[in-house]
Length: 130
Image (cartoon, rainbow, N blue to C red; front, side):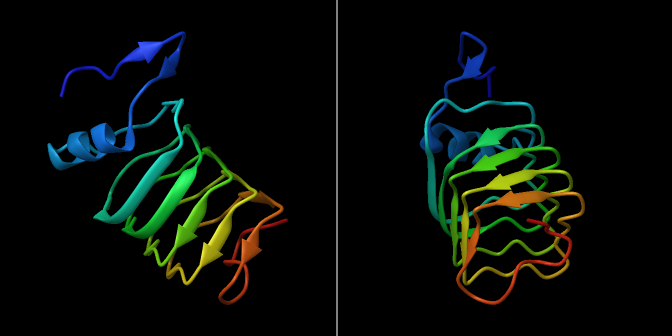
């Protein structure tokens, strides 16, 4: 896929375009700042790299196995019925998000910070601090 559109240093891409790029084989979306709210449902985004990104969105029944969110700003996101097995949130800022019925087996939250997070099923993942 060609370079993603860019306006004033902000990547302009829709959820549909991102999913198309993923299905075409792209996994590295690191360093991007998405201008629009991302919405994904009933899809697989395994091995995706959102490191150093600013994300906000709703993710419902999405597989993020082995996904990378290193040093990302993850704001006002909803992770509902998602699989975050082996996902890596090292040093991420995870603020104002909700985890509901999320698998976090072997996920890494080392150094991640959380402000105003709500967890509906279980407790905060190991390594996640408030």
